[in-house]
Image (cartoon, rainbow, N blue to C red):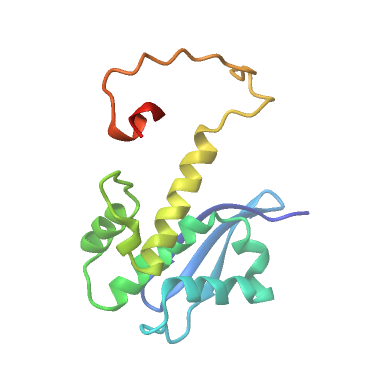
Length: 158
């Protein structure tokens, strides 16, 4: 009988990931203790280390990567002294995609989280050939060019 993950959460004392799952029609909780939660290690490195451990791999593979990274980030900031409300607000801001934001200036961890959010949004909005709303070969009429640009001139100017 397989174990189906139904939820995931964190516990601050001691630092732990809690995975709720169903097994034989019973709800159980798998606790992954994060001994000596390292404040110097990035959340992405911690995520990679957790996934590599065979002991917890079965459960963690069923939880979306973005959710695990979010939970680990919240746990890390709470352990480092931030309040839970501040940590939740900061994480919500990290997962908000703005068209004005320059991702070239973002650090690796922020960039990875933004990419995961974009990927999740893309998959949610994606229309597959098996979907009932799928249309093949959609023709779109674009409006005529309203303004001219210097680079869009004909070659007679040269």
